[in-house]
Length: 110
Image (cartoon, rainbow, N blue to C red; front, side):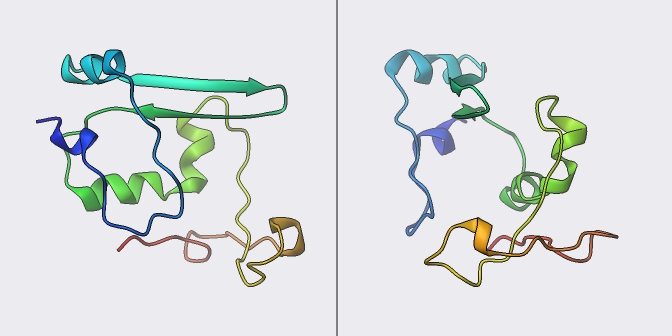
C-alpha cells in the first residue's frame, strides 16, 4: 500500500514536501525508491522517497536519530545538533548541544 507516499501529513509541517512527477510515482508503485539531489559543491539538497512497511513511530525514530547518520549514510561525516532558542537568527547564533550517551539532544516525534 503506497497510499501514504501520496498523502500529505497533517499541517503545519516545518518544511515543504517535494512534488513527485508521474514517473516518480510509478517507480514508487513498483516498489522502487525515488531519489533526487541538487549538487551545489559543499552543500546540496534533495530527497529520497520510499514506501516503508513499518509503523510511523518506528520510521520517525529512525529519521530523528541524527547521530546514527554517519554510520548509515556514507556521505554524512559528522552531526552537530544546535539549540533553537533564537528562532529569528540562524543556527550560528546557537550553541551546539552535547551528545555523550544519547540522553541529550535527542529528538522526539508526535
